[in-house]
Length: 452
Image (tube, rainbow, N blue to C red; front, side, top):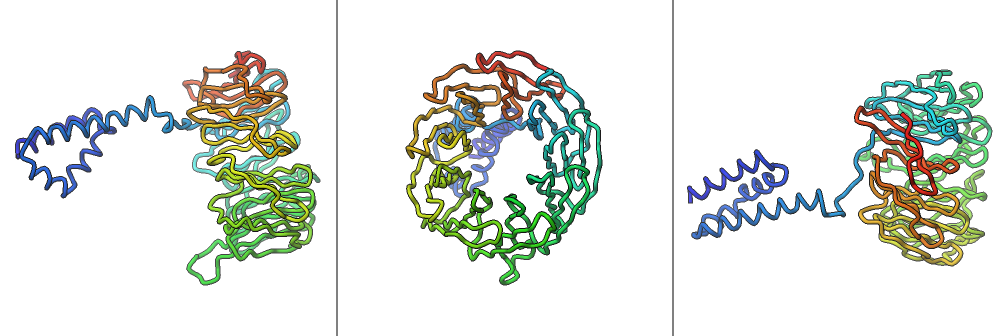
């Protein structure tokens, strides 16, 4: 048996030198199992040992090959070199993971400017505000002119920046990650209007409705303190930063606040959906779905007097907006990875690899299409659906019947898909890690121009 064990060790060493990532870990695990060692000692027929080892090698090599080549379920998008890319009317603003910030002029099909920033290990947030880009890098708040790329102003805040949102009165709100601070700035001259400190809190899902800033708050401290973990909804007056009201939930709140013209909507882990007025926090109604929600509501749509909630577990609830009564509920998928609201009647939902159109009016799925291995991103415009299936593949479908118009296969797609006029645009990257903007003809899927 010593000779056989030596052979096993020799084979294992060869595997380590050649295909260690597919074989050596399972082999080491097998050789380290005391029970299996005992079995090997008991076995008298060396052929059985060889057969067992060969079977392990074959199974592991096959599994690794399948994971790389044929098993579509294991295929995942490759990491992107694009940190973010946003569209501001006729401009695309793109930041690479290397700190290159570019502005692409869609109409003139050229890069207007390129600025370099140090972003390594720093939290990045941004907001396009009229003709300016408000860029947060760590605790630095930078205002950049979109057309020239020039820095208009810089501010250093206490701690990092978690959120930047704007209201309808040319003001923007900055929520910090530390010091529990909320700031309000004048969007015209970047002057700080007020700041508010809320002790021991972490802020989640801020939304603006009228002159109210509404956000979730939970205790940001030691969880062993009895009664310390709180889950609240706060409302601040954007005009002066004063607290309008607060609401404390008995159950843990799920991340996410939705808004309608009448108020705000949120839910908790016990499956209760709450609808309240934004101005005073008075509860209009509560709806108990009688299901413990292990995940969050992905999106909400309003159709007439009906609120449609799409849950990440593939469920949809239709609630009467006045009463909160459940009008209808359905399960239309296993899980949701993307929900796109096209108009007051048409919803497009994506699972891991299936895209479906759903009618709010008829409360049913109209069309579905399996795009194995996965659906990564969806964009809608006019009567077309553009689906990023893989890192180098885009499908164009007709909305009405999901009939395929064209397929693009080519450059690495590192961003979302953007639509401007007759063009479908995305960001790719070259071997030297610089970005290039790829413009496709929406009618044919052919490359019109590549700008770098």
